[in-house]
Amino acid sequence: MPWDASHANHRSFWRHMARVCGGESLEIPGGLLVRVGLVGGSWNQLHLDPGGRQEAALNRAAEYFAGHGLPWRLYAEQESPTADAFAARYGVPAQPLYPVLNRPAGPLDGSGDDGLETSVAAGSDDLREFADCAGEAYGVNPAVLGPLVSPRAFDDPAFRFHLGRHAGRVVAVSVSVHHADTVGVYFVGVRPEQRRHGFGRTVTAQAVRAVPGAGTAVLQATPAGLSIYQEMGFRIVTEYRYWNFA
Image (tube, rainbow, N blue to C red; front, side, top):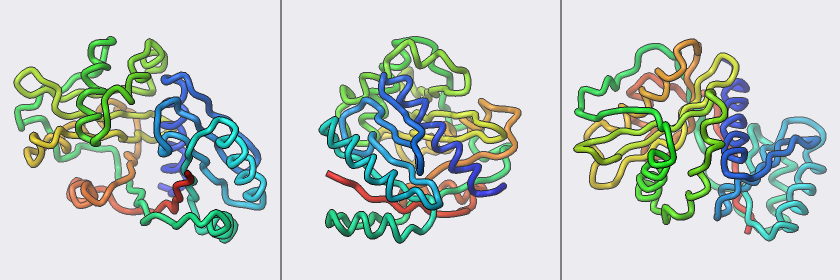
């Protein structure tokens, strides 16, 4: 599958996040601007298009986020001397490359035989449990994720929150995004005390199974999760370049 289909799914995820949280996503010449509506720089982003309008998009993003008083993140899906020069003007270093992976969306290793009970969020209580687990998994105050607890989370069946319960408590979460012929897996998190039991694999597999008609599963991996996803058959197809602007 072309790597740009993986990028399109990633952008779809952020559009959904902005929609659910009451933020904003704007297609502008040269890229996609996203203000999710959550506290923190990584929730506010410019996804830079390849091509000749990058300088205009970068200036628009800087003005937009400064006007909202927000830190933000710049993603470049390909090497970009324009982005490099823009970041250098602000003294902002590039972050480590962020791998993008995909694989055929067939059966994955992670069948739920680890004792995890999986389900799809169906109401506000489920979303609160999702936010509580995700906050602990990512080391942030769950209150930061409060805007996810919204009726808008259920408006579009292409965007679903997945829960994994052990002994009645949500200990693992993931999100699935159906876009074109792809299913994207995002927000995979496991409570620290519940790691190394295979729960991350199970909620990843659950997210892929949520879109049975998809041809390809896509995701992005942190260093902690990369080897696990590779064991599940995902392969690196490209890498994001990104910068964090205060």
